[in-house]
Length: 246
Image 1 (cartoon, rainbow, N blue to C red):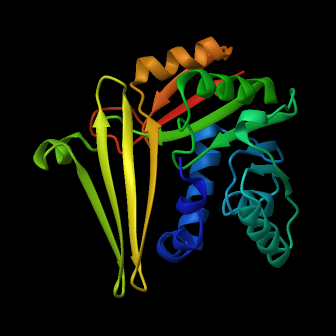
Image 2 (cartoon, rainbow, N blue to C red):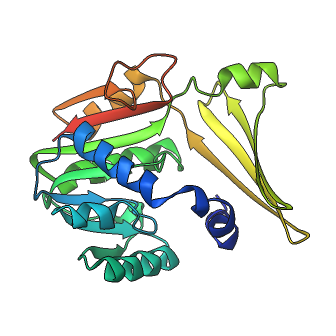
């Protein structure tokens, strides 16, 4: 995965303008409601990116620890927390190296931030989320629905293409779904100031029974799936949400 190319200056230029404060506020509210997080809970936001949710949660009275592998994002998160006058413990930690033990009432992984490694590694990461929780703690996972892109792919030679324009500049995301491996393979092309950049990545796609089996294997006592509103997960759902209880 081309991490630095995906989350470098082009990410700031093309993607950040759409991640508005209003959107982040609404998503933080969704996290609390879907996860059933109690006021004052100690929450692990992993990966936290540039802190757009962690800082809001902290402003609402939650005790938040944010971890990410990207020091640039963490610096952005800390600067914003200072502007907001909130305290968040930001830590430079790769998900594959998280070593928390029964420290949190809740944990959250938002914006399809899970599934970028091989199955063995991703299963281990899920176990690390589980170990980070106190008994009864909850882990809220937000990932793509595996059915989301299929109609578009079937209609467009088994590819799904997203195009984003910023003036004369353009970002193109090309997605292909490997049905046998259950992975979405993607290439991001950016054309900015006459320069073309390429970044490739892939992310695991899960059916509901499969991700529930992963949660059980990771040691969660209970897990359930839902859509982005907290309702029943169906083939029309935009997101697949999983709530696991330690």
